[in-house]
Image 1 (cartoon, helix red, strand yellow):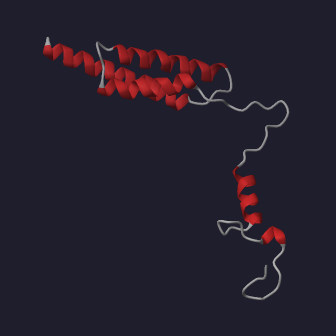
Image 2 (cartoon, one colour):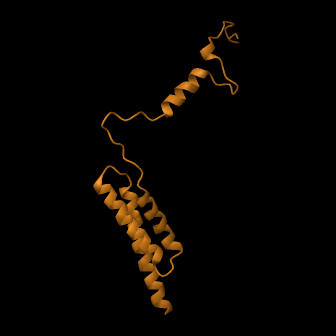
Image 3 (cartoon, helix red, strand yellow):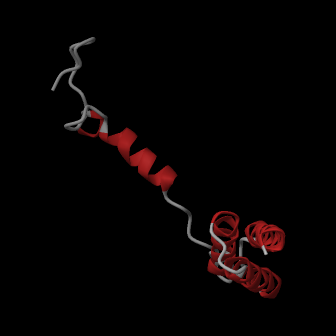
Length: 118
């Protein structure tokens, strides 16, 4: 295969693939996207599923809140998520805090609505 601009042969690693991208460019992008391996003894913060659940229940408590149960679930999962961040290398402190906050707001909103209705 020859370069159309210069007429010189193109090395195999610089020839375009079926999509038109040079193989070298594809490999560089793949290596850049890959996360590096942790150093020996290093612990990466993992996902905090309790914090994720707290945020989901907190958002749901603003929309659907039967007798405040969804808000209570958001608060419980949020406290569990906050405890996980204190115990070890877990991410999601802000997510858990937002879950607790939205759970409290949902509980207060539910109590106010039920007070006016009954």
